[in-house]
Structure formats: C-alpha cells, structure tokens
Image 1 (cartoon, rainbow, N blue to C red):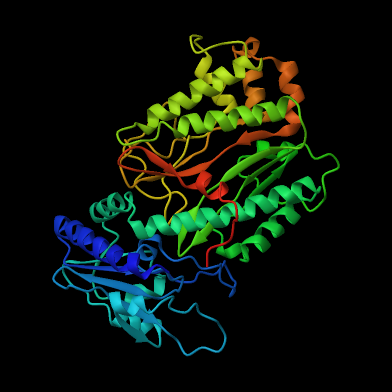
Image 2: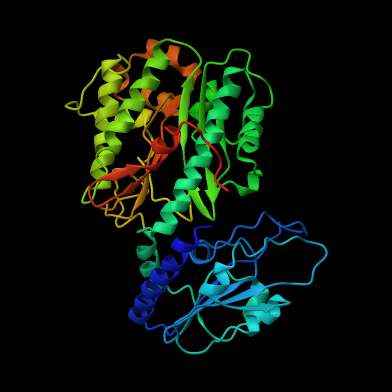
Length: 436
C-alpha cells in the first residue's frame, strides 16, 4: 500500500466531501461498509463486498464498519467492528497508515458500532442498512440523492492513489490473461482456464472484481457467459476472455479474443484490435463518449462491409440497425472502486440505451474502451426477419457463427493532454508479476 499516496488521497476526499456536504446541508456524513446477507431461509452468507463509497476511503472488505465525516472536524472517524469471534476470520486493517489518517475506534458488536454513530438533524448515512439496524440508529437521512450525486461526481475523477491501484490491478490481470491464452492453446476447458487464471493471480474467485467470462467457440456470442464448461473442446476455434483483477478495492476490466488458427476469424480479431486502438486514441479531455460510441459503430460497420459480412455502408438507411445487430452493447463505462463506476450517465440516449457512459471526458476519468463484434443467433434471426435481410452475407455469417464473437477491452485514464492506456502498458511489460 503506497502510504505516500494514500494520505493525500484521504485529504482530497475529505475536502471534496465537505464541499458536497455543505452544498447539501449535511453536517455529518456516515458511510456504512455493509452487512453480510444470507439467502432466503439460509444461514450461509453471500461473499461480502464492501460498499464502494466506503472502499474509496478505506481499502477494507470488512462488514459492520462506519466512517464518520464531520463538517467541522479535521479528521474522519473510523468505527471498526472487531468482534471476539472464533467462528470467522476477518481481514486485518491493511496498513498502519489507516491509524494515521483516521481516528480509529474499535467495537465488539455491531450494536455498539451503531450506538456510536451520532445522529440527529443534518446527519446523512450512505449505504445499505440491515433491517435490524434501523431500530439501533438515531434519526438520520438515509442515502439522500443530492448528496450521492455530488459524491459520485467527485469519484468520477481519480486521485493518484486510485490510479496506482488500477494500474496494479491491470498488471495482475495481464498475468492472468497470459496464462489463460497458454491454457487455451493447450486445449483446456473453460473451467480449467478459469482455475489457471486464479492460480496465476494467486487469488480466490471471490477476490475478483466480477465473475470471469471465459467463452470458447460459440459461447463467445453470449455477452456474459458465466457458465463455465468443464469439458475440453473437441475443436477449439476461439477464446473470448473478459477477466479482471482487484487491488486494494479497485478494479481492472480487461477483455481479449484469440483465434486458434489462421483464417477469416483471426483476420477479424486482428482488425478489431486495430479498430479498438483507433477508438481509444479518441479518448481525451473534451471528447464526447456518445460521439466515440457512434464512431465505433461506423468503424465496425466499415469493417463488416470491407470483409463482406454486410453489403451496405454508412449512407444506407439501415446501417445503424444492421451494425448494432453485430455490436449490441455500449463502447465502455467508468471504472474504479466499482466495475461500472457511478456518475457515467449525464443523460439517457434513446438511440443507444445500453451505453453506460454519456459524458464528456475530463482529466482523471478512468474509462473502458470495449468495442465488440458478435454473431448472436437471436439478433441475427431478428435481422433475417427484418427489411434489412438483403444487407447481410448470410453464407459468410454461417461460416463465422461457430466462433461466437470478438471483444477487445482496455482501461484508460484521461490525462491533461490525452489518455494513458493502462492495460496496454501492463501487457507490454517484459516481466509480468502480480503486485503485492
């Protein structure tokens, strides 16, 4: 943990939060880390993930903790739940710097934690409270929307400490992706590739920022293919792997597609990699992400036309409709303490409802750039039954269906001059290792 970066990060977040509090009429902000939750009629909890608002302050996945920020105080208070418990292990506080940056108090029960939270007029609590907690809490304003919007806006611009963590997460993801490719080339199953990825990162799947998408052959046409096949493929054609990593609560979100052999599909993969790099170069301060998405549609359409998959260009009335049948999702999203970080949408765009980011980019934003090109039977069937059927080379589509699809995804930070590609930098390192 970079202590020299963490203390300025806390100071920055404190000043930023106080502005948001004063604007919202809040004197005291309490951020709850979260509580363990069990399925219906069960006593085994789901894997715990700390509230993202809490993680941006304290890199600790521990339930029952509360951060208290007073408008008139110079130092935040951290109320730590430290039960005497021989049933469960709890993650330790990661560094002595936590004690230096926060006024830390420890409590033996969650009841004691909630009783220690000052309530009353001007108090806001951010987080999802367990039902039993409502009777323990003093009166407060729960998740006031104006305050959350201001906090989200601040989180859209990353501090040097946050950027360091996202860089480290990308370095770890690159290690896993290299191992995944080796296993695919050896003929491994989706499950075996997943297990090899975890082994390369030396982590459990619960430590990943999201469930790995490991799709061989036609499974790559399922955008979120989480059902890992245990059988080795009889004839490996393609691998799409969308797999990330976490470092101190911050995520990397990385996708690569590989072809098993030379041919038309590998040519498409290489062309999509070049296309993705071209789109990523447009990411700079002042760039409209909606316009970048439109550019991706035009470039993917041009690629489909050039390779003979479709028979129309951007001047055709059905161009967008046809291309979005092959590219049905948004170009990317914000990234940080959440995989889909908050504050990405400043406006809804009816043309592209799946676009998670509709802002103008500015320095400090971290975004993913992830154009895709897929052969999805359901969408192709819709296209076949539409008035645009004649625009598609169905014979070539039939040949490409067994490959599923292609997605290439990098994580970029917007700088004062342009952008820095954190993912490509990680993959370009000669000696990759997982950061400690």
